[in-house]
Image: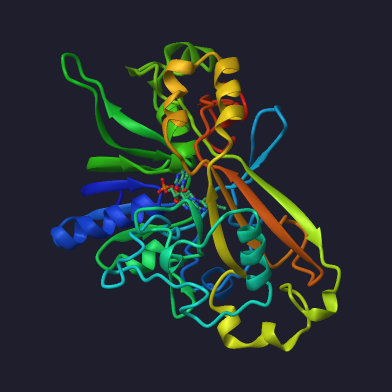
Length: 377
Ligand SMILES: Cc1cc2nc3c(=O)[nH]c(=O)nc-3n(C[C@H](O)[C@H](O)[C@H](O)COP(=O)(O)OP(=O)(O)OC[C@H]3O[C@@H](n4cnc5c(N)ncnc54)[C@H](O)[C@@H]3O)c2cc1C
């Protein structure tokens, strides 16, 4: 049982930001008393997480399983566990803590790599120099890079050591304790768990992700007054911007049935290739392709949206607006990789839609209300 008082720094949410912050704090000042409170479990020793080969964890036990409000009812995935795979490390940082691996560096010569590359070339999309999409120019075809080391994903809680940090997992924080004595700027003094237990400390950082951070702030009385009033929450800090300007990219999966599944081109097939150790060192995909969209169609869409002043910069030069990747397995959960399908993931990289995250109730266990307002203004 962790002490409930005397913490120098309490960090709520042990995902990517929370674990890196905790590790950096203790590295800089080893005497600090740092506490991380995380709603999910520690998965840093789970082989199925470290060596996963497909996105079939989506919708599983480590997914909060959010849904957007009805628009086209998109399911929304979000990690529920200690540590998250750092995604946007500098891809050339081979001397740093984070390692980068790719199909070529691990010898994963997928049989469909050649046809995929040729198909893009036939569409006029060329391979980037060195297949490197992190060399300053990313419009074209580059290799898939992953934060892995010898095939193991680099979960932030393992890459950024937490020795000296107290980590409590499987605890849901329900609100921030705020000192609002007269004539004093409101100050966070700790947190209250959903079960009513309190932890007190000098500094409190909230790193509960894009969906839960606004929820936790609102449950603590920090947010738009009308929303707080609606749910009977006392406003401690009026902050109308909390939960606003949410911006998310859309991802569309297309699945393709293979004409000749006996070739063993897709994960899930009984072909001996998939039993080789090297093919277990990364996701079964070779390339990521970044493309612009035709400017004429984009100009028409921007004019129709009526936000020309804001969005016209998209017309001024090429932008990586779409990202397409081919995955050699059946990509949409809950279907399992079956050896007979491959998938294409199409992602809109610069959505202009903005909308809100808000709360459904005062109960921290209730999922936040997510409205990404996809494919609108
Ligand atoms: C399927 C998927 C694929 C992705 N792919 C990419 C990619 O290729 N590139 C990229 O850059 N980004 C990608 N991302 C996004 C990336 O994972 C996030 O940007 C990153 O994890 C955000 O870090 P964070 O610390 O803000 O939040 P998170 O890593 O989500 O951490 C938040 C933590 O807080 C915990 N928590 C929430 N509420 C509470 C509470 N009330 N009490 C206690 N704990 C709580 C959660 O369980 C979670 O562990 C992907 C995300 C998903 C879901």
